[in-house]
Amino acid sequence: MTEEMIHLSRSDLQALMQAKLEKAGLPVAHAAEVAKHLSFADLRGVHSHGAVRVEYYAERIAKGGTTLEPEFSFEKTGASTGVFHADNAIGHVAAKEALTHAVNMAKETGVAVVGVSQMGHSGMLSYYVDLAAREDLVALTVCQSDPMAVPYGGTEPYFGTNPIAFSAPTMSERPIIFDMATTVQAWGKILDARSKNLDIPNTWAVNAKGEPTTDPHKVHGLLPISGPKGYGLMMMVDILSGSLLGLPFGKHVSSMYADLSSGRNLGQLFILINPSYFTDLTTFKQNLSQMIDELHDNPPATGFDQVYYPGELSEIKQQSYEQNGIPIPQDIYDYLVSDVVHSNRYDQSDAFAEK
Image (cartoon, rainbow, N blue to C red; front, side, top):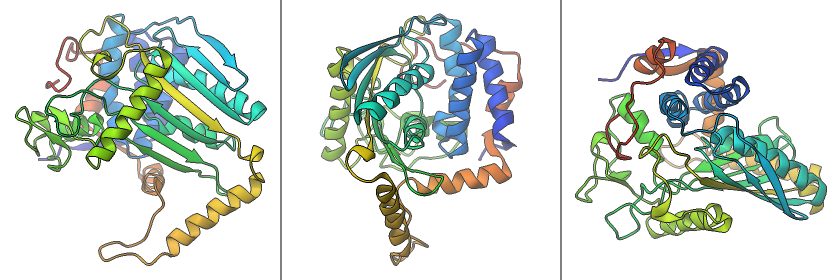
């Protein structure tokens, strides 16, 4: 049975999440940025990275696993390179601060490669590349995560969901944004299915025996997208956002839940390109807008109503939610409006355990 949903405006949802994060101990400015990020995820229909995450963050904050007053520093290592040292701050804030340095560098030199070292979970990557595209930059970002995906041909998790996000500006107000996990689905999608009491496709994950499962409560490992191709991509992401920054790799990446009193030491990498250093910016944006129009004009296959460009369905979802409100499961809404900071559900648990 599908759980009842509460529909909220983005501003109302954002206010509830900010208040909860502040109650957990996060400084006001940091709580505001995280809530803005999470509400953006829910607004885009990516509920796996929205309000469903608040209680986990609140528990980690309350138990000391997030540096509340981090000492940020940016180490410029070259004309177009640098490392942002995050001091295990909450990842959304650390990544946003690092992105600001990367944007400034790309505008000055034409390209920027900036790593974020020792941060917490940074949420939905499309949030960052969207901001970069609105600065007329092409953006690519990758981020490592703890082992939850079985390697191609294996049975035990080794790499994380290790997402990739890309964006490019167009003549429209809305840029092209593409965001994907290197697993068939992100772990947050499993959490979302659990919260709504829904089955999952049998192509998403395996159970403890390594067999495909449709039960989100029996997931023991996620599957790489397109088999060996996704497996290769998740290794690439791990190298770029982990080993390249001198951070733990593969199965050595810290667990999301094993010890909420300790920092995560995660890494993320931004690669920003200034199109104006390679071609005429207006022509570039016009070409991408033309590409979108031509994709829309492509005759749809049987069973499809239209050809959409990658990421467009999230844009459509956003327009719908802006008009009708963002759907939030009743139990998550009840938590957000309650006086409870957290219910001690996550600490010292297996990554796939019931919460």
